Image (tube, rainbow, N blue to C red; front, side, top):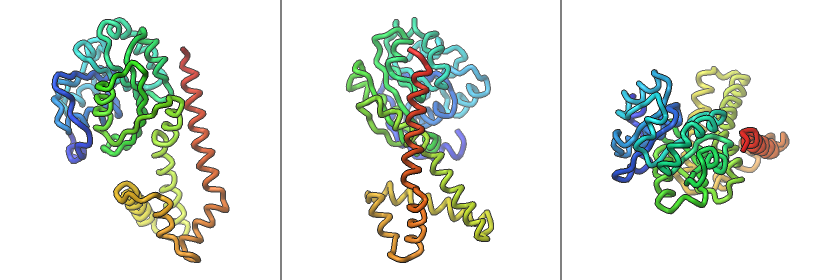
Length: 289
């Protein structure tokens, strides 16, 4: 495990004794969840990974001590929980290749593929399975993720708790009871980090245009946003209240906010979230039944 990974907080819970989890796909999201589980005290022997890339597989074994297999069937052989952490466009192919194993073992299946519905996953795996759909985001890589989860009716209370334990190993989780809202989860937390990065990028460029050296502009913009984020998550104060507290009538902040309002900032954000939500629905439709 790298120094940066070893310094991350153990945000989740360890796996219950006797629980074996197989990750299908060993990319960044799988790495973040596996790392979180190991940091929380889960035994490496309880985790297996199916990953065809020799380099990725070797890195997971080296850093976390988990078993990595090039064959997905071998990876799921002893697992009662499967985490589908592959790209959305290959989920159907992967599921259909594991249909026989799924019907024989009846695992809890957790999918982190954007836009793929639980009904599609259940059907591709042969039906009658407990499936949880999860939409994490890239800050999960540093233990600061935000994930929405939706479970089909076959997921029992113990399985919901298990899914939450696995996903919370990389950040906070929220259960969504209406699957149609998962596309909005994707638009807010899944795509949201890019909106934030765009804001910081724009702040940096605006400061440079005012004559500030780029390195200083970036440093100040990044730390300002980090501090504001911590105030939101650690203070328990609504964002509106925090905004009002730093906005003096007739002051510099008010001038900036007035400019945002005149430019239609809130409407632009609403349109962006609506566009991302619509694209999530399209991705689901494009995947077929």
